[in-house]
Image 1 (spheres, rainbow, N blue to C red):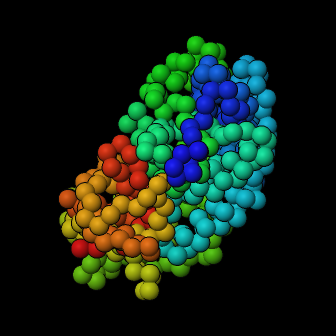
Image 2 (tube, rainbow, N blue to C red):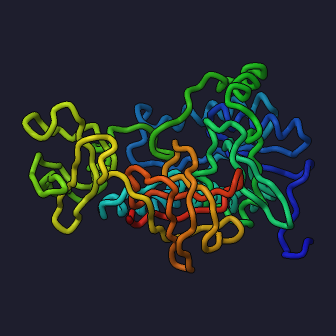
Length: 372
């Protein structure tokens, strides 16, 4: 045992249970672990009941694909239903955030509450030393602690979704494909004859799949009240159908007709006035109302230790974004304030800001507001 009582990294020969999703990434993760000398088993999670149909969430097809890969690899596949845990730990919060006018990220909460809590606990109960998933991320070990690092394939890096993992989770986790490019992963799957080698990547809400988002939210949320779309100057330019159905920076679906503003410039959501049930809209992708240089975030999770005041770092305010240079302007046990070198577009309450020091992900927090 090392000086800070942190477990040592998992070694070849240990029993590892792979979260088998029925996709190409987890298939190759299981194969690579076998090649490296681990004892490998799989586990398929069913986490959604609701309106589970083949049109939306083809869980049965995914399970059959996972089983076929496990059979080909000669490993056992455990099947577990975590639907109640998903509803209680992820989905209820997801809906509550939308009802409050914020825009949550269910994939992050799903990793925290299901994959690296419920699944990890189940794997340990089955006698495993740890779990593995098909995430594009890496785990480092230095100075007696674990580090969450970006995936080698920067186009697929998923460390943004994993920032809530702390030392306990990281010490029991492996990301076997984190050192690979996606094209290499698919090539390995094809070479091994996996049915998943050309399967489309999953999209949409974690474990729920692709939906008509507004229709889906309407099924589970309290009825939303329509209201005015207004400019920052207070001019009414249209009607919204409920603040929950819009997110900052959104362009599509606003339905603002001609006769308002400059017809050559698109309209974007710039803010929400929750108290007055008003959607603030502006014209132009780079309108000043969309750009803010700083943010405040709370509900912080640090992989090892928090950054310090004045530290120069980088951060992402959304997944598909290069990390942006920033400085820690204020921090305490409740919240962090970051100031970016360049103003950021559509900083969105409810989303996560994830903070990096080079390739190391330090952790992150939930954005509460953008500030000047």
